[in-house]
Image (cartoon, rainbow, N blue to C red; front, top):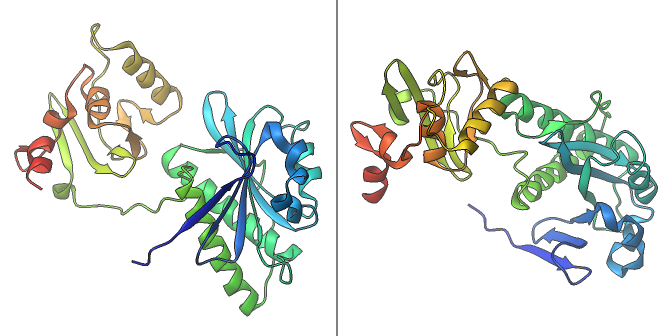
Length: 284
């Protein structure tokens, strides 16, 4: 697998400020811009290229306690971001990730940024349908632009790099997960009519769609698990004590507690071929 170098320049000298991001194998540029610093963007030399450059952007924030994302494109970036401070998205986003060509002589054109916007929206929407993590705030799908063969190939490569950077920056929008259909390769909990399957991933422990849970929590269960259980049911992730999508917990114990309805040690509860997760991982 090819190694990738990511270069980040903290334009205000602080990690929570504006950041310019690029990779060694891509001509594009990414800028991370805080909501509270929109008015400061053009005061920094490195961001002056954003004034007249066509751009595709993602707005990240929170809506009713859920992570959310908005996908957009524009030829007047600063004006557009300022509009998002007063329109229906006002108060819903904290950071913008902006993507532009890093080659002044070869900027993205209107057709390309529209094509990128549509592609990113479609992937964000599919991801939300699959894992219920980032709610998509767009009211409808953007229209897909028609590109010539060569331009489409070049733009598809641009999209691939956008997805890589978004994931690398910690926004897990475009993670392509390996779908395992053979339960024998997964860890399981089978007890008192409960049957659940899961696996360890980069992001935590994934409980697989179709896994069943206890009817309720014991009185002594830690309160945060009870609240999470209520939220997952309210959001339709658990319906009639069954997971209807794959869902990622931060730890195996968080996952096993949700399944069993009481505090538990996931390293012991999750098993494969009679051996616990702890036993198998200690022997790897």
